Image 1: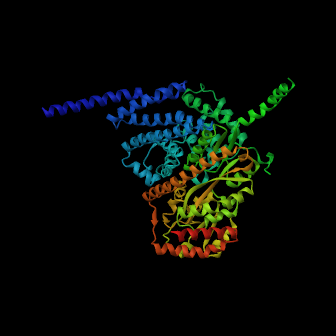
Image 2: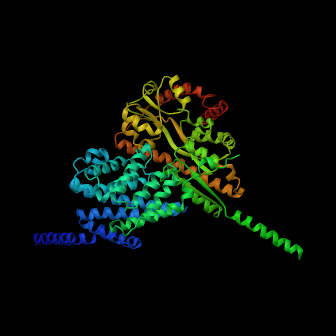
Image 3: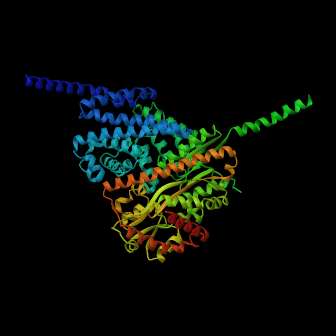
Length: 304
Length: 330
């Protein structure tokens, strides 16, 4: 009798796995979201889908496609909506709203990171601990097929850190982020028409003390634009905010953002959603130009 | 009738002036602080409070990382934009602030606060001479020595190739005169200096060693606090004088709250940073009380020469008096 129940239960698990394996590819199709022309629809739809995917993962924790989609979806939601809203609130001087959004943002990225780490663990047992201790050697066995997860993990982890520099437990992992992008670049330099280079603009725009370099950021910017044939607005916005502002180069800032706004979101539908989001950021940045840049010193009135 | 017309005319003339005054004071606050750090978040909380507490009459825009360095920030502040700033290294504005950076001079936050409080009128005066008003102090942690090899004595510390800020000739000279082996570098070159072996020791707060990943090359931290790192928030007098006395009181109260928050949160952040670094291989070199006292005694002898050279003599004497009085009261 007990054996019969065990067989039935086991059969039930298999049936459930089969059902999950059948439904996940249909549910978790990031291309549908990337090409969406209405960002607000994605903003409303993604949370329900992500909770559904997490419910699936609760019963099927090793469903890799669901893990990767959860990582993608939480990163997308964090970046396109929470972080963008936080930045815009900040530029508009609404610091209470910005702080609340920032707090949600880094937690969402950490959630994304953990899904990606679980995906990598399925293939490379113990890689999470290894990434924290010796990131470069931890990634030595990864291959071209892993680049998507390496990229997503680097993005989620790096964005979590940059939104929460008051969390020592997070910032300690910055070397892992660098190693992930370095390895992904080594394996597939033109992945997703410049996505790696675009992400590396942010990393290289960090202060030199944090290992950043404006020169390397510029090289990644130029390569990202080249690989995307200028159809991706995000490198322009990232470079303008990350490099032109600290370099106090107002003319370049305005030129880059104007170029970003001129990108036709329909020219390449695979960039459509992210282009619309980037253009919202670009316009908000341009609206704040007088706060982001101080007047040239030589034309300013001096204090008594 | 004529009087009534006059009143109306005056009212019409005054109206734009009144409206202008009601528009409030907009203050931009520049800094080299990283966005989303504990300091940036505290300043943004202060900005929200300023807006609330003055019913929108004072609006503070916090602009982290808005300039390349604090030298550029000081020049821009004097030129009028931004109108407020945070300086992590106030000693660059006036040497009086160097009194807060004397190696091994302070033993605790309590002692530091006492001296800071007693010397605040002096600091306010030197800032006023430059057209600036002191709003509050910011705690950036306690600097400790991080070293590539284990260091337990002053002599061992002297043998290290220690980082010192390029351009600070007086500090370089002091190091050399006292038998250290200083290596002047731009702060942006510290990581390169560590990687190439040009330097193998530097003083910094634990959070900074973690954030900049410098600790990877220097796996020992000497657990004798070197000096507190105290920043200041200032506003130009010209802007401050546009704010009513009542609003000034509200802004000062808010700035004080932020100061207290930072003095609570930053040491906690440093303790977390040390724990994180320890889990990744950092060794905290703990000394017994006698060894710590020995460090302080030697340092007291060596840093006495800062009096009158790196710190105005009267400021040095005042700080020493207050510090000793605090210790005697304990």
